[in-house]
Image (cartoon, rainbow, N blue to C red):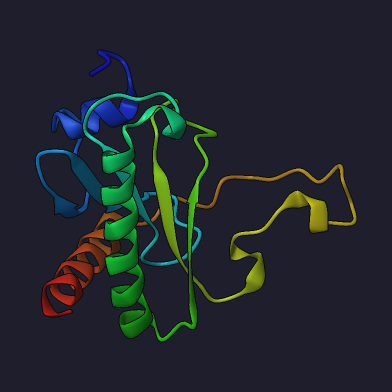
Length: 145
């Protein structure tokens, strides 16, 4: 683990997170600036700067958890699709985003945007009590599914 990496610090429980799943190798928690309610990040506990650096088996476990979360999110949020994407834009620690998609633009490519010089802002930080409720709902739904 890296001393200063935000996600390594979350994995070591030095920074609190709204955890929806954890085991010895991976941790899934709510994004505090969610695109949509239920937006989950899945990280390997061990530090890998890029997702392609992870062992195949670990990447497969993250994908399998993403699939379980997607099924839970479809039931919980009544959405047809759930997006799964590795980005690594803001934190150099491999992480997957799992996002219930209410609109096609919830996860999209800038190639589809006509105005190429758009400026983007971070979504607002979600209130802690809402994150606590959302994490509890997702944990229950994972357990029931």
